[in-house]
Image 1 (cartoon, one colour):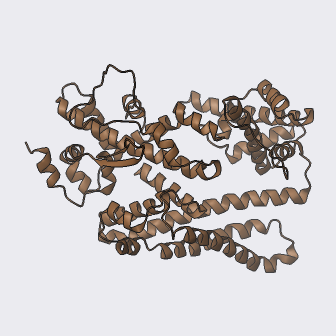
Image 2: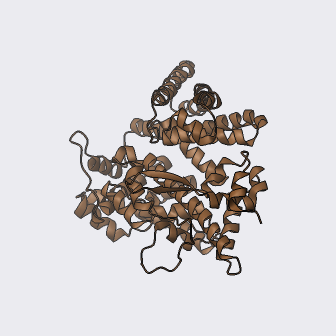
Image 3: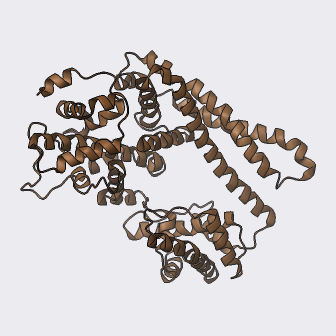
Amino acid sequence: MKTISAIADRVDRSVMSSAVKYWKFVRLDATGRRQVEEIAAAKAFLLQQFGDDLRQSDLADATIQRLLWQVWQSETTPSDERRLAEMCLRCYISNQIEQVCLHLEGQFGNEHGFTRYDLFPLVLNDVLEVRRAPQIATRTTYRSLATEILQSFDPAKASLSTWATRLVRHDKEVNAFLLDHGIYLISDWAILNDTTPKQLQRILAEFHALTIAEINQASQLLQAYHQIYRQDRLQQRQSGGKGQCPPPTLDQLRRIAQYLEGVTQKLTPEATLSRLQALATLLRQYRIYVRGGAAPTESLDQPEQQALAVELQSPERDAEQEEENEFLSFYRNQFLSSLDQTLAQVTSDRLGQLRRKGSEVMQQFLSGMHLFHCQGRSMTEIAAEVGLQAQYQVTRLLKLKEFRADVRQRLLLTLRDRILDKAREYADPNRLKSLDQTIDAALDEQIAAILQQAEAEASVARHCPLDSLFARRLCQYLDQRSTES
């Protein structure tokens, strides 16, 4: 049988770089700084088990995880192999924990004043014993989060990345930290789903001090939501459906609006969505407060609570204002969906161009884009991370200016037709002739501003996710692509 060192020495450089998460262990050193340690034994074991398939990029993460888990769980497998399979899985978990911290930073950090480095000490607390098998039963009752993730993992129910993400986001210390920063990790729709009418009335009266009329409007809205959304949700669960509460569909919003019309409120589906979100915000503020988080603050210029109350209480809005709000809501949704679609298309096009150079180059491109935009790494650091020799090779591979230019051109074309068609529903017929040019100029100006922000922040290595909308949506796409691969 080949020795571990002999196998490690013969590793082919064409192994998928995405596989390194099974042998690179992310941890904190004695000073609390992030370190990435390559576990040679885990690397050799993984390549011994899956080497050819990894080199051909044919093996999915779910397959690797299931087979490693089976080796680790098997009582007939030699203890050394069980130990090595566990090492590979815990390396993967450490990388996934880091990614969740990066995502939380990108999603909330800038607005709420924290970084991934504040989260790392809460969750990167695993210690990997390389020279001897980790003790499953120890004299201490302490268990790292990674141990809890692994010991509760079932590959038949979820992927390891999904399970690790779920447990990190539900970790008590993480949630306590986020609450201290005014963040409550539950969707608007779950909040509305499990709030009773009596709870709503008490919260709005005692905590937010709304008027009786405002509370009645909110109660009608919640009742309509329960009647439509929650009933649909219960039927789905009875049919075997599980998972988190998704946003209401357009059909559900229409049915909620129709229900409200029968109790004096007449709303469009878009206005219904806006008011549901406003009501969920009020409830979220209360939940953060009672769980020990920061109480909501008010602006002297435009108190948030007052603005939300107005959103709830005024069913008879001025028609022109209603149309403007409806159009703006449509525009925001279309801008984001068009940007997401464009980023996916341009990335796919670039990968198609690189395909002739081989899967390793394609993976280097994806890794480089992620390291640059989602971790703020410099070109020199990226070169070392993805296996290139120099900074200029990374610059030539990523071609960021060309990438942004392609996004700008395609986004303008994609978004223009969507917005123009919608705008014609509101525009004065006498102004239709000038509408094309007006929309072209407005879209070009906004798209240019977003990409200029992306270009400006790209000039400095920050060692944290870039803040621009362009970078945030690109990272969201890259993370989703990595999870699905």
